[in-house]
Length: 632
Image (cartoon, rainbow, N blue to C red):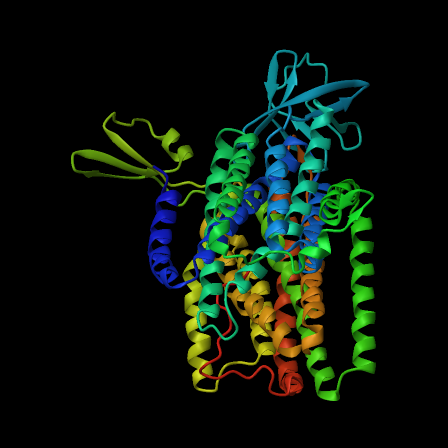
């Protein structure tokens, strides 16, 4: 039995029962969207839980390349929904866009399961090439150098060289090789697998682009104007998002670590297929919502092909473009900057020629919040890259410091990780073992789990303050979020003296980092989404939402760049010098941690100067509530 699965079940039961009871009073279509998006987020976060490890341990990308590829991927994931939402609104409708996106996601996730053979790390010395042999995944990975029939451990020397441990005196290479006398290389065992990987994530990017914005839009279409169930309906819907995210990192991470990458990615694909089938079969519950705005708009044919099928063909033809971009981080940056520049020129033009002074102040406040969100997401989204690598390399993933055993109902119960259990000299036959260790990928469930627990708390706090006229203005909430993003990293920096002999920190500090980051997310994400609609003139709401998501996309790009700063040298997908890896990560965490705290303090001070820019648009009363759980 695994403790994390048991704990996950307890959290799920305690939080899901009241949610399911409330859903009885909602439109039946919410059940369709709830479970469809739950499974879609399960597939997305299940794949993300394994992605950075897959790149560094299967393809043997170095840290800089892996973090760069991760940044390109997540940047495009948040950029493409701008196009998918536009296409659905103007031509094919949200339902068909969701189905098309879902199909692309199914093929993309199942494509990830075709991993091929892992690449091989090589050592080049004296004109000869020697191979490293690796087994295991994530933190359980072991890498040794093969010489003849022997396998040998290795370690870095103080001057940057390489020491081969236990090497015979008559070996072909010396036991200690000075820096610069050797080179590491990578042999592609199955060259097609890397191309298959990039094709798969390109399909996922395009699929998310069509599905993500439209399923949220469809939820809104289920309610008539002024329907009092709307806000609670969105809260329930966002619970499903985070429930899927929570279990994705637990289950896909477990299978990927224990049985192979294909198993984790395959389960993500099964999740997406389940969500798609649920959505298709539940069409009648949507009661006609989500259809094309005007059926005539997609009926005309061009060259004998309907516009609808031309849109689908265009989506497929754009996949090679994504395939090209996702491997070229610099190009992604220029696309991002170009998109942001064009949309800002349009907004400034509108501000000068169309809107009043009050409306311009409100737009200015909305754009300041968006810029702050870029900083927040660039720190928060280290979760899938530098923090994931930190979990694998520099975190003791044992929940308990030592095994605990006790008798219960005639059985011996042992609480221990697999590593701790193996160290015990004797284990009785009549023993129940409860696994008290987790995988590095499992740590990505922390954020979603904390959202399930704390989103109602934050919603209650904000509602309580709003009823008394003391709800903090959005700039102060963003200041809190920025400070939390920075403080979470400083927790790890301050815990550095507690690192063990393997340069690993206790798990509780990484858990605390995710807890503080979650508090920050709950003050930024739902508040930011709400403020974009409140502060924008009606004719510019969609454009400002596009700016918000472009800001999120920009944060993802910066997150990849920051993660690259924390990178270190690896051999065979395993860090060469754990001590150097710890120092590199903590140096980066210290920099971005204080950046977040200082910017949070600056934003708090700025709030007193610019809170009047809202001109009442951000005011709340007892009848107004912001959505509680953060949209992921």
